[in-house]
Image (cartoon, rainbow, N blue to C red):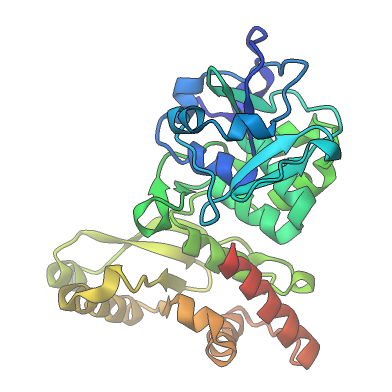
Length: 332
């Protein structure tokens, strides 16, 4: 059962906690595999749920909840009034003076509340805009959770919700910021397995007016059948690719510098990709460096768009718009 299904099933009221965790700090805790099953159901917030300075200074409470509050990894918390912002290095306060939506908070420990994935998305989309909201929605619907302490910056886990479940949740939710959340969820595609896969997906599928390519959603992490000759060469009956547009015969593979550091990995990928090209696929590798380099990114994008029979605006304004979009995607 996913978290979003439980958003409307409230458990009995609870004793007032000391800390209400929000934003990327909450999503980082949701990266823990099995956390959604352990927490079970959201809790109606107590009358005085806002975080205070004394609360976040209690290191034992933070440790018990698996939280940190330092400059390198700030703790994001919710307060219910601007006057209650936390003035401490390593803590970032987000004011939510409106009524909390149903299912907004779960109880992480006896003294700590944590924002639900949907409420995190609602706040992120409202505070930071549609693109950052889309990144959060893709993470919630993906098989990973970003966490600064994780190897490579993220943990693998089951999706916390589906795009359809988030869409339904925000359809019946009329609280502050829900319009921004709905716009973000409209861009979510299920199945991403890493933050960089999400970056590639959103670059190619976000609307042109946001700097994206406006392409239809690809299939993510899907099985592609291969020829008997290629099966024999790589010793596998099929391959799984990162992004795939079947009709256009396009495959995009995000290449992590860490994963592709061995000669064996390079040889295997080269053999596989050449075999797929023999079968009529256009196979393109994507790296973070390519996306961050305007000339390299334009070359990659133009090849993909050509395969679709489309073209993007070829003017300085759009180049700057896409540059800014990619910087936002990569800096998240």
